[in-house]
Structure formats: C-alpha cells, structure tokens
Length: 258
Image (cartoon, rainbow, N blue to C red; front, side, top):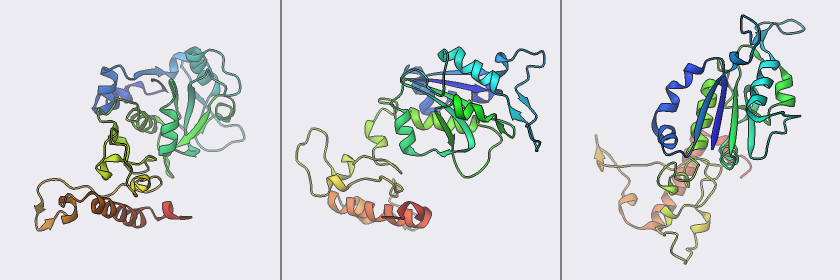
C-alpha cells in the first residue's frame, strides 16, 4: 500500500508517521508514505496555492491548478476522477461524506491512496468534481486543515492491512467491525464445528464491548466475574449485552432501524 500526502505543511507528518503501528508497517515495508509539498507544484515566485473566492465571501480558497498538477505528476493524466486501477484520490473536506470503518475497509483493498489536505476556507470545487474519487470528512466538525484527518485515515487503513498488527484477529471484533470473532467463541480457524452463536458474534454497526485486565480488583471496582469464569458461551452473551448497552449510551444513532 502506498500513501501519497499532498499538503502545504509537509512537516506536520513528521510525528504521525514515526510512531506505533504506522512506523512498524513502514519498517516492514507493508506501506510506503510519501509527503508532497503542494507549493512545489506552483509556478509563481510567491508559490501561491490560494486565492479569493469568486462571488465574494470570507477566507481564501485553495486553487485547483497546483492540486491537479500534483496528482497528475504522481498518477499521470486523470480525467473526471478516473485514476489508475487500485487507486483512490481522497479530498479531505468538512463538506465530504463521513469516513466510516466500511470506507477504511474499502481503502485497505487498494494499492495507492492519494490524500489531498485541504486548507483555508475550502478547495476549488473542480477538485471535488473532476479530480477526487472520494470527498471525505472525519466528523461533524471543522478542522483548520486536512492534515490531521489524513493522518487518522492513514492510521485506520494501515491497521487493516494484513500483518500490520501482528495478530490478524485484533481488528475482527472492534467497534464497527464487520466480521465474526473466533476469540469470543473460544474456537480457532482450524476448528470446523460451528456453535449456535458463532455466526451472530459481530460488532458490525455497534461499539466494542468493555475490556478489563489485571488487577482483578482496583479501588473496590472488581472485574465482572463472568470474564473469569472460563464459560465462553456466557462470556459471549455478556459481551454482546454490554456492547449494546454501551452503544445505546454513547451512540444510540447506531441502533436506529435495528
């Protein structure tokens, strides 16, 4: 997987790319990350990447010319958001579609992702219409720029790449995961029998269940006994119930329509 990050602040990514799973994935050559300074694709002495909006209004708008030139320098000519196969061109924008785990899973199947970090009041709409394959927002709030959003997407996608986490089951039953987890049923991939509940074990569309570790008691707050019972059926039921309770408490919108 190759990530191309187009930004006017290339130094921003010095930190996010050098820690944790992303760093290990880079060292293991599971991913490549390349930060491109958008100002290198300008042609005036001030290296201008923005201009005043037509029609008036506050703020400045990022120009389309350097963005098209940067992306086409990477990919070759791109016509009407039709990049080479296996490639996504992602514009980070508060006006985009919400980034979800299912989007991350789709991106994880690709060979290359170009992340365009918007700034200022916005980006010339011709970038969204004719260059980007995806216009993405990471939430219902406004950031000063797309760099932080790009780093979050890079991290989210990287951890879905096989071998990035070391343990392939680590992504199976997280919040918003789509597949059933063998860990809850006590079975392994080598076992061919299927329990009555195995196919139901999924956090698809809901939050993860609560996790506990040692010590079993801390300041009189004890770990639920069921988790130390060794009864996988009861543990599964408890986890499922708690996941639903947590979703109802923190994200009831995820349960609407169920």
